[in-house]
Image (tube, rainbow, N blue to C red; front, side, top):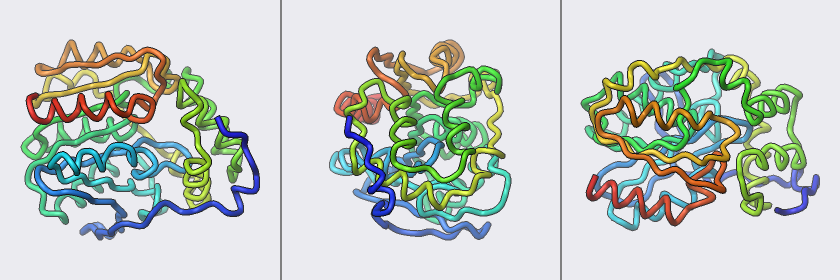
Length: 282
């Protein structure tokens, strides 16, 4: 792991700028896009400084090179997308995603989501099953009641540090250490991205966020599901994997030891090739 250096805060670089789409609801959604073919929409998790690019920069170019249209948006309230003064509840994110998919003229797609992004993918699939051909989920939210999440060390720390005010590089480094089993993945580049983005995030992104428990509705999801979960996850209870396996009619799961909340970062090559096999053969 790199040694924190507060000088990076002042010189924090923004994430690379991609494209923008304005939804009918008036949200400006920033996204990266690469490749052509079947669309795969990548949905990042929550947390201070989160963005689609910082979550998936090691993944989406591989999907694009393999013949897929990779679309990596920043959720509203995150990255370079609009940050409205509103309640950041799950239906708000789902509506925003619907607006983006509509603007990009996508009729069918695979949704790939981590944490909050996984919860959005689940709810979107429940609301719009005709649009989602497959689901790829990494430690998705929305499978427990709120008290279960508040017992998780990572969630408690995330709320604590984000509520305290502007984050510096050292506090971001400590938080990301909880995201990962192997802290060597915390690079100066990643810290600069997330500290820079965090400076523009409204506090309401976390304080108003509400994600309902959708576990009882999992049996309604008829499309094929591929899931990943690190058993060292300190943000989302790993028991959610069994709920998906028991209730989704077409589901498979990859469980990984020595892995935290970011499977796609800590086990990038395994994640990429397993997903591509699922997309081709699942």
